[in-house]
Image (tube, rainbow, N blue to C red; front, side):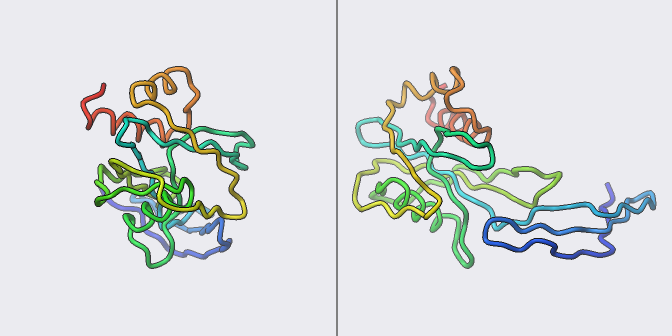
Length: 181
């Protein structure tokens, strides 16, 4: 299948919270499309942290885009020059204060929105996490940390309490990997 050809590309928004480019493209059949917008990102990470007691560490926080408080796994953007695993360890510590004794297990990297973004997210499993540090929240974050028994996480998906699609997919993927589905 032939690729689309980018005839012109310009960055029209470049802020810490949003990077948006506008492309002029030529489709394989020759049709020209003006103003095809793509959100650019370095990607983000989602972490499934589980304690030795079998509790999953979740975060409850307000998300301004949707204007609601959501329950999800710890997650965050990958900073410039940072690896996905480094971002996962940093975000887990900053948001929850928890850290694993051993390396994170990379589960999978997913494409987020291939139509309008170049974004991907990397999912990591953090086993045997323990509270080891003070949290360091960003100015836009007010986060409540909640511990939920591994066997009860599926109930939060079924009830719709966890309903952010990236996190729903991440949880099902890890539960499958752990043989819990």
